[in-house]
Length: 112
Figure 1: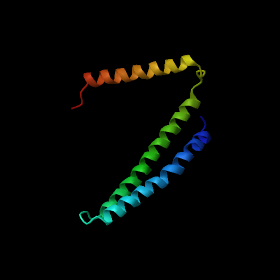
Figure 2: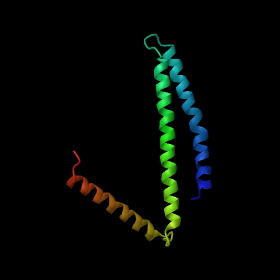
Figure 3: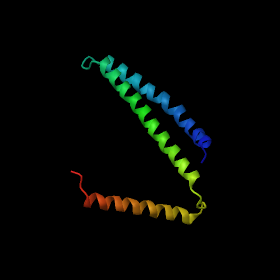
């Protein structure tokens, strides 16, 4: 999958999800504003939006870095595995072995 294909696949999701998120925020604001038992705190809104934007920026930076590093490593490797059924089984087993050893080491080497 090329970055252009990924972007094209992601566009419909963003197109539908973003307005829905803003509608839900507006609905929550309206419900809380018209409920006499709850008071909408604008400082909480500012804090939540600030934390959300900060999280988006930081996660976006890290994800872009990981994708960039992955693409760099993919291009730097002198060999490439073909896209065949056995490569997926080999990749699954390799990841499973890595997870097994990480779990094993976590039991043997405690940090706390």
